[in-house]
Image (cartoon, rainbow, N blue to C red):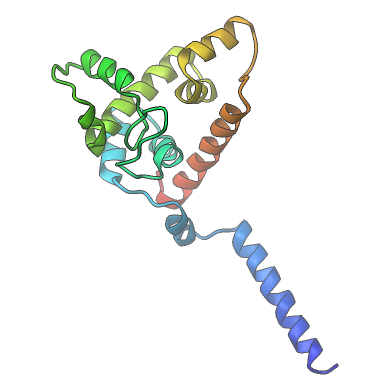
Length: 177
């Protein structure tokens, strides 16, 4: 019995410590769990497109986990998972003349195009959650939902928006964005 008490106390102490740590994650832990690669690119384009840098980092993390070579089954490419047709339209609207799909693997160009697109969606819809829904599900879907006076109709898009909103707070806290 005498050996059981110290072990029980140790187990309780570890459990309490873990629970505290999990609920009050120090910034160094968040920085390990949620890296911020390409920080200067993120900060620069956030400033250039008047975006919250924590929001931009959150979208990148959710889309690609900062993997510049990411490619989805739907053909979306790079850090911000842009579809080539979308990126080509952005390139034309922003003065580009020689868009190539390979441009989307370039972190600077991908984040520039994605930042422009995110700013466009924020301006079009006027609120962050709707803009994020459009980023995930497409403008056509969001426009239909709005025309029918419905909220976000896809469960995966609701989860996406909630996750990005959570990550935005994590990046703001961990990196002082």
